[in-house]
Image (cartoon, rainbow over all chains, first blue to last red; front, side):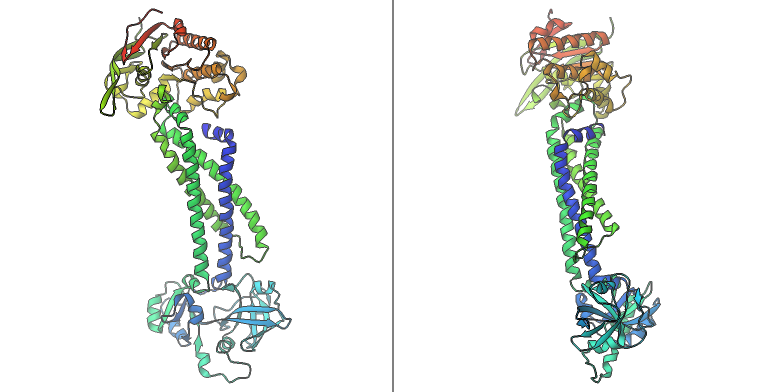
Length: 374
Length: 226
């Protein structure tokens, strides 16, 4: 610590320059973390807030489009309900629609069709819960922020079906960047089948659902699939079936991995140059009796102070910037855990980069402090 | 007569240079008593710096033995050698080789942070003894060449070493400052009972020394009159 802190104070311009590079990386990392969380929320918060532990889709359905392509027979719900470990099984329908309110507000909704007495029934923050009338819908808090409110009537463009907004759920419920609306399963089935107001409804329409939502711990999904003729995914696995989810999250993850690698390399390069510049000084100290451990510890403390201070500054600025951006329509969400993880990763990888650089201290020969070798 | 603090007994040092073998030290015998300031003079490449490196435990001799305060260096591992240098050996380098980031007083504190040292000298008092008390907060680039070299000597003495190894202390100094620096070395050597070996090209400062040896082609000559 003795030498480390004094060298930072002495060469503060050099360390400030390096620190600002790390701080900029930290700012970018915080913004990317917030963007990742925001995109995840926009993509799958509707699924995250369901109590289901898994979904049973149509057998062999394409995994990345299961929510839009899967059609499961209603009877599969009873088969799943009888499986060991299953507490509840309920029919679940999903369809994306475009509509307009009676006040002229355009609205896109991911309609979740459910049975009102199932474990999937949503809670409401304002208005009333679904009561059983066929034209009721409760909407995400984010839809309410976009101008749709309790008492509005939404007309679906594809079928002309009208839905009355009776309640607003707490928090964000979105699927594939579209606000979620819960409605009775039968109404959902008619909309999905394209049945227009007043048209006769074929019986098969009421036999078809998107998936069976399953609630239960230690459920043998493979056994349930064999019995019901379905293909199951855990709720978390089903996130990948949300439109664009995998592409978005993997792109952001790749950018973050590159940022970490760049940070480690930049810090490593800085300390490599610094160690080379200090070679004579290190040789002198080794000749005077400084142990390798002393010199390594001193350099690593210096690296840690640089990384910790500059990352803290960067994270602070990133949070301020994120706060400003989250007031816009960009999908930003502030969560402590991903930012803490990203901060720790940045510091740890930076320390690894620094450690690889300062290890060359071991190779500095104290003999070079003497005579002609200077 | 007291036992010598530094003993080099038939010390030889060989190293390769392409296909050839260079003899840097050729059966060197040297004993230095506490309070003695021994000068080694000779042309460049004669082996003077090699002698300091071997005497300070920076390099093991090819033949012969070296002891400091009765401790044979050959029997010590790297960790014990480092400890011995920290506690028993002081180095004074050409151009002082101070740490640019440290103030004058911190230069003297630095060796005491390397590890435990028995009964070290007080850095501020020592700074006063070499006439730099008023410049305790100055960094090396704010000091003159002579002041830097005096600080380098003080840094080597702060741990109360038994042996002081001095490498061309006047190489970058003018005549008067050279006299001041070597006078300081002689005074500290005598008053603190240090066994000092000084390598130098500067014949004008030899009158401060107890004895002088000339080194040519790795061989150490008999002591010459001062």
